Amino acid sequence: MPGSFLSLQQQRVLGSIGRLWREWGGRPIAVHAGGSQGDGARLPLGRAVSRWVFAQGIRSWAVAAPLTMAAKVDLTTSTDWKEAKSFLKGLNNKQRRSHYFTKDFVKLKQIPTWKEMAKSARIQQPEETNYPKDNNLNGKISLFRGDITKLEVDAIVNAANSSLLGGGGVDGCIHRSAGPLLKEECRTLNGCETGKAKITCGYRLPARFVIHTVGPIAQGQPSSSQQTELSDCYKNSLKLALENKLQTVAFPCISTGVFGYPNEDAAVVVLNTLHNWLESNKDKVERLILCVFLEKDDEIYKEKLPKFFPIDPGEEPPSSKL
Image (cartoon, rainbow, N blue to C red; front, side, top):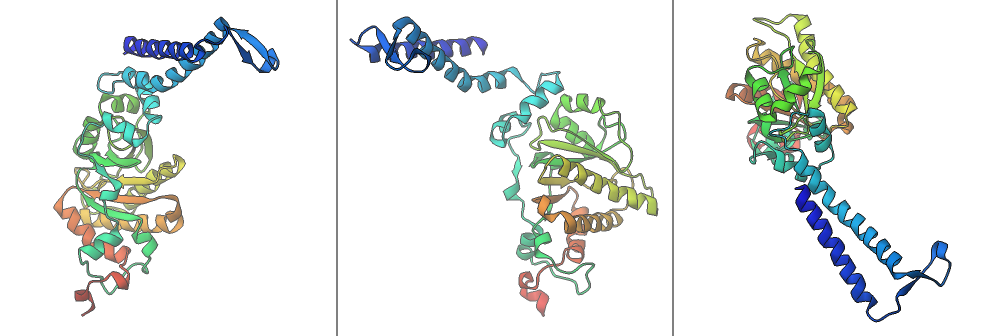
């Protein structure tokens, strides 16, 4: 790439000289110049050509430099996570897509809000709810069943273990999809305590960042302290999101797998935590996504969401009004 870049620059500079020569034509071998030369002063042709070529060369370099940088950083082979992280930070989503581990990524606009889903899926509103209806909050949350590693959002949350070095379940999937640089950056974080959260680059993931949090291990009925720790996983992840000005965040089901937290109990903690957080921070984020993988979790959230994020009467299907 450096060779091709030099050739490209040389061609552009030589082309600039040619244009300059054609523009001069049969004019005198001197040009008028302003500035320090004074009005009406005449520059020797050699100096004028040098200035022209220098300006054209700078312009060519500015255009070609990003291409050179892109070639320098190969996320599949690089061993320098700092270099890769710095490189990715300067790219927009469109530029980053060539580095994704998958071409089958999911854009935010493909994920309906809870407000939209409830209407299209004809979700029925229960008579008793935990909170009053709030259409603004209903437009800030989504339920999505699928692969969290394919979501093109600002950040996905990783249900990690305390080492942050990868494991089973969603943790392993995220590390495999992001590539080895994720683990290299995680090595520098010195682990994470239960209920806390830490943030890294997303590397080859469509998500720009990964927020790692460690949920409680609850084999059986969770204690009140474990409920608090699970809630803290979401609160501290969102705290990092705000600190890093992240607008779209996707959460997996934290602690419900091998950590043994009962799925229904976890959903109650999650929905209560997110509703309370959004009441105070709804203007600071665009979307919070509950990303589930199992049909069981999808059914649980569809059943419980109307209690925590009630549907507006205008959105209720006719059957729910009978």
